[in-house]
Image 1 (spheres, rainbow, N blue to C red):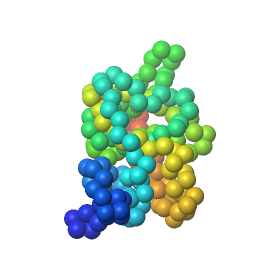
Image 2: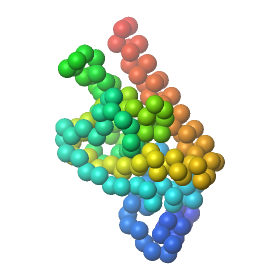
Image 3: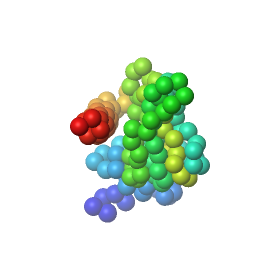
Image 4: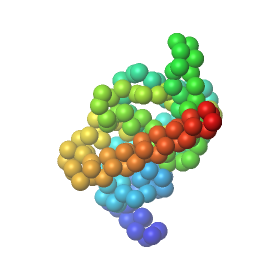
Length: 168
């Protein structure tokens, strides 16, 4: 497995070492089952960003331009209940989790707010850049969108379970 994954350095960088970014993307939970050729394409459009505690990465209702992969830290997914009241529906601290999938799903509007609970590092990927990759490689697009659908399903299941537990 290790030898197979190290091949991506050559694929992504044409013989030049890109940085630890390649290894981090490979280790990201969301990307674990993707082919090396897909990972190589994704690495080229990833950008590292750092946020401090209480910073908002994305806000409910705003235009969705990027999706984000958590690399370090803890984030809260929040929804607005009333005009000035947000509720945390989930916290994420597992490296490699993805948020902001709305950047590649119509109507491209974030459905929740993501706020940092501590210093946080993420990789951002432009939804527009990702869609260009999918247009050039529809099989990659289908594979990626299946993973997005699975992620949404998992999150809905978790929220449903919490809701049921809170009212029973």
